[in-house]
Picture 1 (tube, helix red, strand yellow):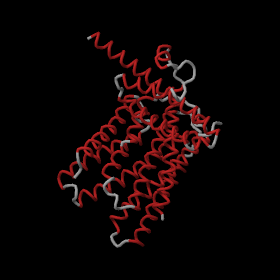
Picture 2 (picture 1 turned 120 degrees about the vertical axis):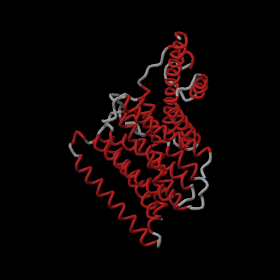
Picture 3 (picture 1 turned 135 degrees about the vertical axis):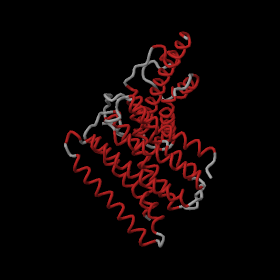
Length: 133
Length: 232
């Protein structure tokens, strides 16, 4: 009985902490401005939308990986999947939830674009180092 | 006997724990988050001793089993102390640190006594089950305390991004392990998944802490209202 209670509470709080953690990652990157060239490459002219996420992730995979951002990108990718699931199920019945999931998916895409910006800068740094040596 | 996957995850987890300490030293945050770093150093030490015992006595030996569960229990208490230090960070301006410490100590003793009472009623082999029971309960108490701390942070409008991420990572870790121990108690027959689930879950905390120390500057700020699920 006690174990079942702990299991249910833990799963609920796990989901909550996961969402909060991902939102804190996204919020930390939301202040960073995108360069015009990343905007061009990703097609994010003004605000990012959820539809941009897959394309930006594909572009991310083309760049050399930075070990320090791998975990956060995977976490936000999982969060995006969770939002897609909510959008396809609960949000069909609750219109306000649909608006919320759309806004969240857009922020996930912006986070991915910021990660792409960092990876491009990282690749350029590596290239510059190679040229110097 | 653990396979290549378990050894790989074990090594990765230990490396990540070392990375947390290195990142904290590099970013000049080792002393500021001393309890967290001591916990990581203790985890590295325990990993090395576990490895030594595993190779000396074998995976199925009682020596390894006892050391595994007792060191796990001690590490959980260590994480509990690290969580208390995060409480102290959040409440430092209110000067309520000594009350936090006293409350934490009482809660820790209460959890141990509660777990001991449960095992006394149900089992003749007290020590082995006591460790699993007290670990499950400590993880759950840790989870509740993290949840309370997070609630207080939202209420106090805490803006320090690094502190927010450190606390949320502890919450994730406690949730995963409390669920895992509860599942183990409910379904002991699922013993095939523990060798995979437990080590992978163990990487969550060092990974998130290393990221927080490495990527988030100490002076970074964020509006807590951005994290609330319902926009304020």
